[in-house]
Image (cartoon, rainbow, N blue to C red; front, top):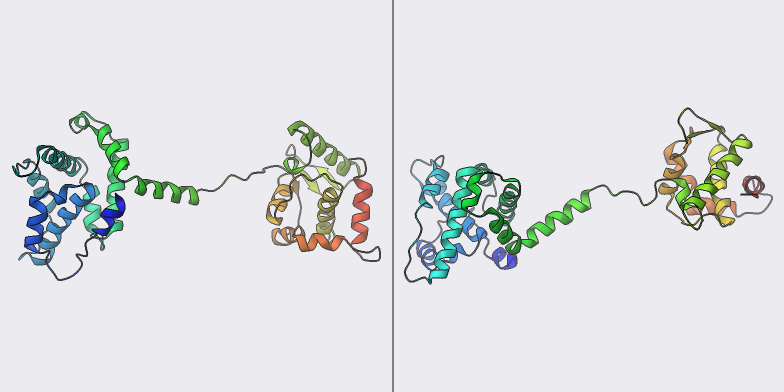
Length: 303
Protein backbone atom coordinates (compact mmCIF):
# COMPACT_ATOMS: atom_id res chain seq x y z
CA UNK A 1 0.00 0.00 0.00
CA UNK A 2 2.77 2.42 0.88
CA UNK A 3 4.50 2.01 -2.47
CA UNK A 4 1.31 2.93 -4.30
CA UNK A 5 0.91 6.01 -2.16
CA UNK A 6 4.54 6.95 -2.67
CA UNK A 7 3.97 7.08 -6.41
CA UNK A 8 1.31 9.72 -5.78
CA UNK A 9 3.74 12.10 -4.13
CA UNK A 10 3.07 15.66 -5.19
CA UNK A 11 5.60 18.17 -6.33
CA UNK A 12 3.94 21.34 -5.07
CA UNK A 13 7.11 23.37 -4.77
CA UNK A 14 6.63 25.20 -8.02
CA UNK A 15 4.72 28.18 -9.31
CA UNK A 16 1.98 25.99 -10.74
CA UNK A 17 -1.42 25.71 -9.14
CA UNK A 18 -2.86 22.23 -8.74
CA UNK A 19 -5.21 21.79 -11.74
CA UNK A 20 -8.76 22.66 -10.71
CA UNK A 21 -10.48 19.99 -12.78
CA UNK A 22 -8.07 17.33 -11.54
CA UNK A 23 -8.74 18.39 -7.96
CA UNK A 24 -12.52 18.31 -8.46
CA UNK A 25 -12.33 14.92 -10.14
CA UNK A 26 -10.34 13.40 -7.27
CA UNK A 27 -12.56 15.09 -4.70
CA UNK A 28 -15.84 13.87 -6.15
CA UNK A 29 -14.71 10.31 -6.86
CA UNK A 30 -13.23 9.91 -3.37
CA UNK A 31 -9.59 9.50 -4.44
CA UNK A 32 -8.44 11.93 -1.75
CA UNK A 33 -9.83 9.68 0.96
CA UNK A 34 -8.08 6.39 0.37
CA UNK A 35 -5.88 6.78 3.46
CA UNK A 36 -4.37 9.32 5.83
CA UNK A 37 -1.62 9.87 3.27
CA UNK A 38 -4.00 10.91 0.50
CA UNK A 39 -5.90 13.05 3.01
CA UNK A 40 -2.66 14.86 3.72
CA UNK A 41 -2.20 15.35 -0.03
CA UNK A 42 -5.60 17.04 -0.20
CA UNK A 43 -4.84 19.32 2.73
CA UNK A 44 -1.45 20.27 1.29
CA UNK A 45 -2.95 21.11 -2.11
CA UNK A 46 -5.32 23.57 -0.44
CA UNK A 47 -2.55 24.97 1.74
CA UNK A 48 -0.14 25.37 -1.17
CA UNK A 49 -2.72 27.15 -3.29
CA UNK A 50 -3.45 29.61 -0.50
CA UNK A 51 0.24 30.12 0.28
CA UNK A 52 1.16 30.70 -3.35
CA UNK A 53 -1.83 32.49 -4.81
CA UNK A 54 -3.83 34.26 -2.09
CA UNK A 55 -3.97 38.05 -2.23
CA UNK A 56 -2.94 38.68 1.37
CA UNK A 57 -0.70 35.58 1.66
CA UNK A 58 -2.23 34.84 5.07
CA UNK A 59 -2.07 31.18 6.12
CA UNK A 60 -2.25 31.69 9.88
CA UNK A 61 -5.87 30.57 10.10
CA UNK A 62 -5.60 27.75 7.57
CA UNK A 63 -5.62 24.84 10.04
CA UNK A 64 -8.56 26.23 12.02
CA UNK A 65 -10.56 26.75 8.84
CA UNK A 66 -9.63 23.31 7.56
CA UNK A 67 -10.78 21.70 10.81
CA UNK A 68 -14.08 23.56 10.53
CA UNK A 69 -14.41 22.43 6.92
CA UNK A 70 -14.09 18.78 8.03
CA UNK A 71 -16.95 19.07 10.54
CA UNK A 72 -19.65 18.48 7.96
CA UNK A 73 -19.79 14.90 6.60
CA UNK A 74 -19.84 14.53 2.85
CA UNK A 75 -23.00 13.19 1.23
CA UNK A 76 -21.98 12.39 -2.33
CA UNK A 77 -24.89 10.18 -3.36
CA UNK A 78 -23.04 8.75 -6.37
CA UNK A 79 -20.38 7.20 -4.11
CA UNK A 80 -21.32 3.81 -2.58
CA UNK A 81 -22.45 3.97 1.06
CA UNK A 82 -19.54 1.91 2.41
CA UNK A 83 -17.08 4.24 0.70
CA UNK A 84 -18.86 7.35 2.03
CA UNK A 85 -18.61 5.89 5.52
CA UNK A 86 -14.87 5.31 5.09
CA UNK A 87 -14.41 8.88 3.80
CA UNK A 88 -16.24 10.39 6.75
CA UNK A 89 -14.28 8.26 9.23
CA UNK A 90 -11.04 9.62 7.78
CA UNK A 91 -12.34 13.20 7.88
CA UNK A 92 -13.35 12.74 11.52
CA UNK A 93 -9.96 11.32 12.42
CA UNK A 94 -8.00 14.12 10.75
CA UNK A 95 -10.23 16.70 12.42
CA UNK A 96 -9.66 14.99 15.77
CA UNK A 97 -5.91 15.56 15.42
CA UNK A 98 -6.44 19.14 14.25
CA UNK A 99 -8.54 19.91 17.31
CA UNK A 100 -6.53 18.02 19.93
CA UNK A 101 -2.94 18.18 18.70
CA UNK A 102 -2.65 20.75 15.89
CA UNK A 103 1.11 20.99 16.49
CA UNK A 104 1.55 17.82 14.43
CA UNK A 105 0.22 19.64 11.36
CA UNK A 106 1.98 22.89 12.25
CA UNK A 107 5.24 20.94 12.22
CA UNK A 108 4.38 19.62 8.76
CA UNK A 109 3.50 23.02 7.29
CA UNK A 110 6.59 24.66 8.81
CA UNK A 111 8.89 22.33 6.89
CA UNK A 112 10.46 23.72 3.70
CA UNK A 113 9.69 20.36 2.08
CA UNK A 114 6.13 20.12 3.44
CA UNK A 115 4.83 18.39 0.29
CA UNK A 116 7.58 15.76 0.16
CA UNK A 117 6.87 12.11 0.80
CA UNK A 118 9.28 12.09 3.73
CA UNK A 119 7.45 15.02 5.39
CA UNK A 120 4.10 13.26 5.06
CA UNK A 121 5.52 9.96 6.25
CA UNK A 122 6.90 11.66 9.36
CA UNK A 123 3.52 13.26 10.01
CA UNK A 124 1.78 9.89 9.89
CA UNK A 125 4.35 8.45 12.28
CA UNK A 126 3.82 11.45 14.58
CA UNK A 127 0.07 10.84 14.57
CA UNK A 128 0.58 7.19 15.41
CA UNK A 129 3.01 7.94 18.23
CA UNK A 130 0.57 10.46 19.66
CA UNK A 131 -2.26 7.94 19.55
CA UNK A 132 -0.09 5.40 21.37
CA UNK A 133 0.30 7.78 24.30
CA UNK A 134 -3.12 9.41 24.00
CA UNK A 135 -5.45 9.30 26.97
CA UNK A 136 -8.76 11.00 27.43
CA UNK A 137 -12.48 10.47 27.09
CA UNK A 138 -12.47 12.17 23.70
CA UNK A 139 -10.54 9.22 22.32
CA UNK A 140 -13.55 6.95 22.57
CA UNK A 141 -15.39 9.08 20.01
CA UNK A 142 -12.99 8.06 17.25
CA UNK A 143 -12.06 4.61 18.58
CA UNK A 144 -8.35 5.23 19.02
CA UNK A 145 -7.46 1.53 19.18
CA UNK A 146 -9.13 0.85 15.83
CA UNK A 147 -7.36 3.81 14.30
CA UNK A 148 -3.97 2.65 15.57
CA UNK A 149 -4.62 -0.79 14.12
CA UNK A 150 -5.63 0.72 10.78
CA UNK A 151 -2.48 2.84 10.67
CA UNK A 152 -0.35 -0.16 11.55
CA UNK A 153 -1.92 -2.20 8.76
CA UNK A 154 -1.80 0.57 6.14
CA UNK A 155 1.65 1.96 6.91
CA UNK A 156 3.48 -0.99 8.45
CA UNK A 157 6.48 -0.28 6.22
CA UNK A 158 6.87 3.18 7.80
CA UNK A 159 7.02 1.76 11.30
CA UNK A 160 9.28 -1.14 10.34
CA UNK A 161 11.79 1.27 8.81
CA UNK A 162 11.73 3.37 11.99
CA UNK A 163 12.19 0.30 14.17
CA UNK A 164 15.08 -0.97 12.07
CA UNK A 165 16.75 2.44 12.12
CA UNK A 166 16.50 2.62 15.91
CA UNK A 167 17.86 -0.89 16.29
CA UNK A 168 20.75 0.00 14.04
CA UNK A 169 21.52 3.13 16.03
CA UNK A 170 21.09 1.55 19.44
CA UNK A 171 24.35 0.53 21.08
CA UNK A 172 24.75 -3.21 20.95
CA UNK A 173 25.49 -5.01 24.19
CA UNK A 174 28.82 -6.83 23.79
CA UNK A 175 28.57 -10.61 23.54
CA UNK A 176 31.38 -10.96 26.10
CA UNK A 177 31.70 -8.66 29.09
CA UNK A 178 34.36 -10.47 31.13
CA UNK A 179 37.57 -12.26 30.30
CA UNK A 180 36.51 -15.62 31.75
CA UNK A 181 33.78 -15.89 29.11
CA UNK A 182 36.29 -16.57 26.32
CA UNK A 183 38.13 -19.26 28.28
CA UNK A 184 37.47 -22.91 27.48
CA UNK A 185 35.24 -24.76 29.93
CA UNK A 186 32.10 -26.90 29.93
CA UNK A 187 30.07 -24.26 31.77
CA UNK A 188 30.25 -20.86 33.41
CA UNK A 189 31.53 -22.23 36.72
CA UNK A 190 34.42 -24.05 35.07
CA UNK A 191 35.37 -20.98 33.05
CA UNK A 192 35.30 -18.79 36.16
CA UNK A 193 37.39 -21.32 38.07
CA UNK A 194 40.02 -21.30 35.31
CA UNK A 195 40.10 -17.51 35.39
CA UNK A 196 40.59 -17.51 39.18
CA UNK A 197 43.53 -19.90 38.79
CA UNK A 198 45.03 -17.57 36.17
CA UNK A 199 44.72 -14.62 38.55
CA UNK A 200 46.24 -16.62 41.42
CA UNK A 201 49.24 -17.52 39.25
CA UNK A 202 49.80 -13.91 38.22
CA UNK A 203 49.48 -12.76 41.84
CA UNK A 204 51.89 -15.41 43.07
CA UNK A 205 54.46 -14.53 40.43
CA UNK A 206 53.91 -10.83 41.19
CA UNK A 207 52.87 -9.89 37.68
CA UNK A 208 49.81 -8.21 39.15
CA UNK A 209 48.72 -6.86 42.54
CA UNK A 210 45.31 -6.49 44.14
CA UNK A 211 43.54 -3.15 44.14
CA UNK A 212 40.93 -1.50 46.34
CA UNK A 213 38.27 -2.42 43.80
CA UNK A 214 37.13 -6.05 44.23
CA UNK A 215 37.90 -8.22 41.22
CA UNK A 216 40.21 -5.60 39.72
CA UNK A 217 44.00 -5.83 39.60
CA UNK A 218 47.01 -3.66 38.77
CA UNK A 219 49.57 -4.82 36.22
CA UNK A 220 52.99 -4.20 37.72
CA UNK A 221 55.18 -3.93 34.63
CA UNK A 222 54.99 -0.32 33.46
CA UNK A 223 57.95 -0.63 31.09
CA UNK A 224 57.69 -0.95 27.32
CA UNK A 225 57.89 -4.74 27.67
CA UNK A 226 54.63 -4.87 29.63
CA UNK A 227 52.51 -4.75 26.50
CA UNK A 228 54.38 -7.74 25.07
CA UNK A 229 54.01 -9.67 28.33
CA UNK A 230 50.21 -9.38 28.27
CA UNK A 231 50.06 -10.18 24.56
CA UNK A 232 52.26 -13.24 25.20
CA UNK A 233 49.90 -14.40 27.95
CA UNK A 234 46.97 -14.27 25.54
CA UNK A 235 49.01 -15.94 22.78
CA UNK A 236 50.12 -18.74 25.12
CA UNK A 237 46.61 -19.27 26.47
CA UNK A 238 45.49 -19.79 22.89
CA UNK A 239 48.33 -22.15 22.02
CA UNK A 240 47.67 -24.25 25.13
CA UNK A 241 43.99 -24.58 24.23
CA UNK A 242 42.58 -22.37 26.97
CA UNK A 243 40.90 -19.84 24.65
CA UNK A 244 37.46 -20.91 23.48
CA UNK A 245 36.63 -17.87 21.34
CA UNK A 246 39.02 -15.91 19.16
CA UNK A 247 37.95 -12.26 19.04
CA UNK A 248 39.09 -9.11 17.22
CA UNK A 249 41.89 -7.16 18.88
CA UNK A 250 39.69 -4.32 20.26
CA UNK A 251 37.44 -6.84 22.04
CA UNK A 252 40.40 -8.75 23.49
CA UNK A 253 41.89 -5.51 24.80
CA UNK A 254 38.51 -4.57 26.25
CA UNK A 255 38.23 -7.89 28.08
CA UNK A 256 41.67 -7.43 29.63
CA UNK A 257 40.60 -3.94 30.67
CA UNK A 258 37.56 -5.42 32.43
CA UNK A 259 39.78 -6.78 35.21
CA UNK A 260 43.26 -5.33 34.77
CA UNK A 261 44.58 -1.79 35.15
CA UNK A 262 47.73 -0.79 33.28
CA UNK A 263 49.58 2.24 31.93
CA UNK A 264 49.60 1.15 28.29
CA UNK A 265 47.91 3.47 25.80
CA UNK A 266 44.69 2.04 24.43
CA UNK A 267 45.84 2.29 20.82
CA UNK A 268 49.07 0.44 21.56
CA UNK A 269 47.25 -2.11 23.72
CA UNK A 270 44.77 -2.97 20.96
CA UNK A 271 47.58 -3.28 18.43
CA UNK A 272 49.28 -5.89 20.63
CA UNK A 273 46.38 -8.32 20.09
CA UNK A 274 46.13 -7.96 16.33
CA UNK A 275 46.64 -11.25 14.51
CA UNK A 276 49.77 -10.14 12.70
CA UNK A 277 51.30 -9.00 16.00
CA UNK A 278 50.45 -12.24 17.81
CA UNK A 279 51.94 -14.23 14.94
CA UNK A 280 55.34 -12.67 15.67
CA UNK A 281 55.51 -14.77 18.86
CA UNK A 282 55.80 -17.84 16.64
CA UNK A 283 59.51 -17.33 16.15
CA UNK A 284 62.87 -19.02 16.58
CA UNK A 285 64.64 -19.11 19.94
CA UNK A 286 67.12 -16.42 18.93
CA UNK A 287 64.37 -13.84 18.43
CA UNK A 288 63.66 -11.36 21.30
CA UNK A 289 59.97 -12.26 21.52
CA UNK A 290 60.69 -15.93 22.08
CA UNK A 291 61.66 -15.24 25.70
CA UNK A 292 58.18 -13.85 26.40
CA UNK A 293 56.53 -17.01 25.10
CA UNK A 294 58.93 -19.26 27.02
CA UNK A 295 58.24 -17.35 30.22
CA UNK A 296 54.46 -17.60 29.75
CA UNK A 297 54.60 -21.32 28.96
CA UNK A 298 56.32 -21.95 32.29
CA UNK A 299 53.94 -19.59 34.04
CA UNK A 300 50.79 -21.27 32.74
CA UNK A 301 51.91 -24.89 32.68
CA UNK A 302 49.69 -25.82 35.64
CA UNK A 303 46.63 -23.82 34.59
